[in-house]
Length: 238
Image (cartoon, rainbow, N blue to C red; front, side, top):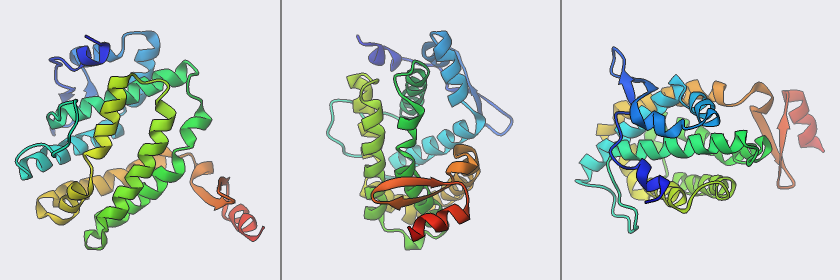
């Protein structure tokens, strides 16, 4: 049994619940398996920030609601079983922590991580707009944004993830297909979840990107980060 398969066996709850039932931190054997070394502990500590865990709570609630709404998991043909919403959440955390470990081991550079920024920011911006005005959403367009992000993320993580983890990464993206997106933005059962997600994405925007990288333009198919509006204007005139 591979380490990935072993990690997917009976794991304890992801976190201890606070007064409002939100996950405050990772705990139990799940955290122990992830933080098996000093680098693992550092990567886990950096990944398991309250704002990230809150976003994962929303993700878990979204997938659980979707599965109930469709009377089961999405019909995806894969050798990896489509499991419960909490399992999806565990996969996201494990892949995130392993990416953090690879970064600390210098297997992935900071520059490589930033190559996903353009695709991520376009998707992020679209999501905030559509979450606030779901009637304007075009599911195929959002799906295309997700595919672009998946391509960039996979290119970076492929050298450092096991085959099993890459299958899970692919599945995590494929679950969010046009069918899922249509239901998520259309169905009233997701209304409160959409509001929570929009709020959390706005909170994370300021924390995810340093000020120097909050603006970017495209020039000759290359991303040019701008420190100020003046620099952006100069770059556009060139």
